[in-house]
Length: 227
Image (cartoon, rainbow, N blue to C red; front, side, top):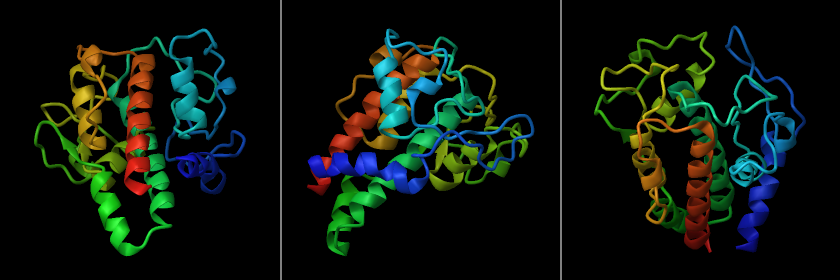
């Protein structure tokens, strides 16, 4: 377990997440994404907030961008939108994938196959659209700040978060009833209790708590599979 924790904290240094906030390349017309790993950057987050430790974990342990296009605020009380879901989830999966690569790099081919089978990231297609390209989503355009995130989810991870009509509707609240299904299926979790999130909408802070708990369980799965 000690070896795995070391990887978690060393990883940002060689993936670019250990740097100070700097603008990265972006196709967004109105905003740019920033990379940061300290919760102190977020001006609207206090240590007394109920979700403080979970948010800190996502930022400083898992290097997840929880405030795309806005480097100074989080907006924890805001309703989680489909656009924000796509951005935070894609950032989380990319960094988890880097963690997996770091763990697997030390294993032989036979062990890699066995470990990968136990910690495989699964696709998600609740409404069976079978979309495999961002071009299938008609209400997302290249100038949108969440375009790249939706593209990564669809084309790299086979995750479709569009609604029954096949539209993202980025500004609309994400369906809280589907959050637990999505997180548990994608990460292959068995222990986490997602029943309290099974409601029509959830806030960004509630999603942070859910995602942090989910990644902690997934991290334990990696440790158990690898060591």
